[in-house]
Length: 108
Image 1 (cartoon, helix red, strand yellow):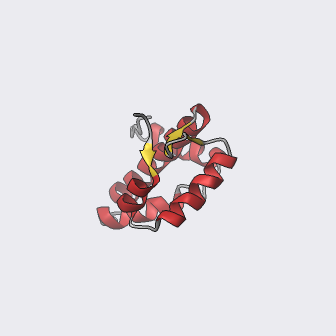
Image 2: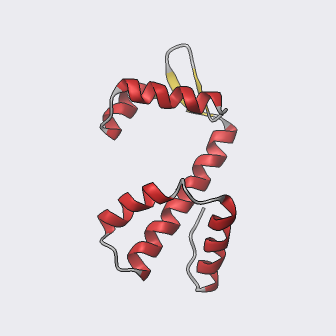
């Protein structure tokens, strides 16, 4: 069966099932996820494109914080999570282009 259960998401993230249900509702309204009749959550095609972009941005930020600024890997990962949603697509693209000019590839 495809998808993931909200209870599993809650457990993995250490949050309440109610918090997951609220987030899923927001994501569903935005067209990023679907939920089947058994309650399993799946990314839509739009959601997958967005998730890949967020994940690439996260890796870019984490790499920059660790490699260029010397931030502890655990802190860099946590702070990249906070930063990845705050940057515009344009800023992300410019930062990625800058890193690529430095010879640093951030794979998709």
